[in-house]
Amino acid sequence: LSPLFPPALTNAFLMARSAPPLYVLSNNPPHHGDDAAPDAVILCQECGEDAGRRPHRSRGPKGIRQKACWGCATCEDFVTEPSIISDIVATSRRTSPGLLISLILVVILVTAQAGSSTSPSLPLLPFSLWSAVRGFWTAIFTGLCLIFPILIFNAVTAKTSFKRQAPSSSVVKAVEETSGHFAELLSKAIQLKTVSHDRFMSDEETDYGELKGLHKLLEDSFPLAKSKLQWTYVNKHSIVIKWLGSDKSLKPIMLCAHLDVVAAPNDADNKWEEEPFSGLIKGGEVWGRGAIDNKHNVIGQMGAVERLLEAGFEPSRTVYLAFGHDEEISGHEGAKHIAEHMKKEVGEKGIEAIFDEGPMMVEGALPGMKGHVGLVANSEKGFLTLEMSIKAPGGHSSMPPLEQGTISIIADAVNKLDSSPCPAHFTKGSGVFAQLEMLCPLFTPAMRVITANLWLFAPLMKKLLLKASPAAAAMLRTTTAITVIKGGTKSNVLPYDVKFIVNHRVHPDDTLESIVEYDKNLINNPPRKDGKKIEVKVEDSTPPSPISSLTSDAWRWIEESVGEVFNNPIAPSVMVGNTDTRWYWDLSDDIYRFSPVELNIKDVKMFHGLNERISVKGMGGIVQYYEKLIKKSSNR
Picture 1 (cartoon, rainbow, N blue to C red):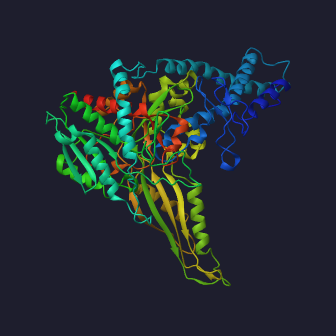
Picture 2: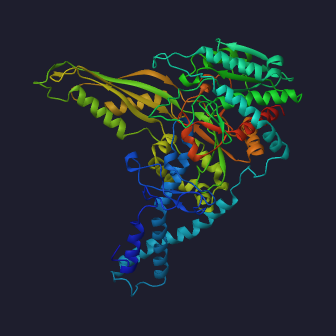
């Protein structure tokens, strides 16, 4: 650049491109606590260099004081989705200042040179060379001038069906009057230790007596539902409740939740602030394992049905409630049997829509957007476990083979799989693409310009996503993880059988067959001269779920119910974990995974983690949401 730019511009340009990143690590934040300014930069206290993350800090949206960075918010299962958009924006924030300054300098330069063939401030170049350079940048500048109005027009005219409006007085009153009661019921449910233990992975056994205790709690706490509705205990411990509708021509809906929870260690390494199964109500919150995964939905759905029965409501569409008892260990004894029961009840594709647990409404997950955003998973990743192995004659280590040995061949295969991940999907209609499009009008102006013009910025956004974080990349592609490797028995013996295990989480736009074929081609090409070939065997698999519609009546019911109760927008998402719905694909084309709970980004670490809890007020909101959903499903 130096032959074309004067020293001042060159130095400014280089300083802009080499400017330090926005995120700077510090363990002694100067701005912290309630006295911080609303838009103050608050250095991250959660991540350290030992956490293996890039140095960074947190910048809360204006009006939100935040003590944890966006990057720290990445957690397991369905709560990863909120932090993914944070990663995109954080990455773009790190790179955009330098790029913007550089672009401004180029525009200034081209504008200054547009009317003259030479410039006294620039070193003189051969006329033909300078004319070519000037013509090139003039064309670029002209193109930007032509496209800029289009970008702005698209951003300004982007529309959304969401309209912010305060919840009605009846909703507010119902939440205030019922929150305490349903919080008490959730507290009692938490005190029942319905922990699922995988018989293949744990020495402990599931206590079915605790499940029976939860059954009795539901029966006693919701007397109208027990006396007026049809209860069926499926495979002894799961429950299906049927509320018969008045119009048999309408397909039923099914609300789902699960009765079991994961274990809650409470020791020196995993110390809870309160006992994990105490169900303590403290500080306006209900504490304990299952508070947000997933007993809150059990109590919320039952509470909605009970209140509607008290009000004399009669649904035109039949409503099913399905509560599995072993979702945390894949639902083989619960949801699988519920699916068989429901096929006998309604037949294949006999349900209008299924609503199960999933992502929640998270605040602070999307920089540039105020308030909570409900992420509704309309698809779910599959999984594929492969064993890859190679065999060869053994022998003594003093006489290794002239060609590669088995371990070396396997090492090459592992390297190929790690360095050549499966192709990413970021096209119109895919999960994250649709999410950004739907939320576009609600972003700040800069983000709105980008998300309203993904026809232009999609390649850039795709690159940002793939480099932002593992969680972001996982939303775009089938992931590959080498989890087990075995080979060799003795230090002086050549191994004759070496194998390793690969676990894929299969993106909805891929198939199991395509991923197996991709792996085979990758690890065995080019063919080896000695003829050795790695064998691939499928150990376990579940295909990715079908993708449910974003224009169905059921999607509209969710959107309207969330808006009326919580005044929040919703957007589609991809479920990276698996829920009980994996067993229900034959029952309905429209399956949505969503939990109507408002959380701050810093609280998502509670899932399967420490100090799980939910606000008392939140329980009233859950009940109101399910009341709205049931009522709307009965409106033709």
